[in-house]
Length: 139
Image (cartoon, rainbow, N blue to C red; front, side, top):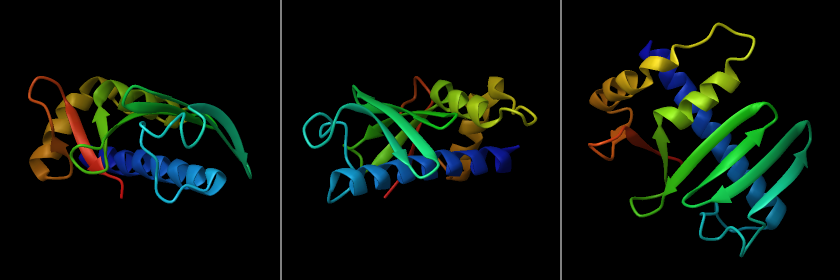
């Protein structure tokens, strides 16, 4: 199961990288944006049509809720510890459920358990002891 979760984490991260690349191209940003730059260097929320892909996004707090076509990608950026994406089991389960539409569902009830195992393997890094938040570098 961990291999399936790893693959989905990589897809999650790659979709965020893709979105950041789109923002850089569309708004002529020199580097991927942080939530602090939303509303100053580019609109805090918007709808972008790039080829066959539609990106609907809204920056909030320390993160962004993104819908790329039918995928839901809700993430936070931890810019204090590098340029990383915080992954929580709840936010990640939203991605998994939207990604898995029409395919056999992944067991999202045990995501926290899988995240702990992936942290023990060194694939993810556990940030907080009281909740399951992990960092995955997106630079």
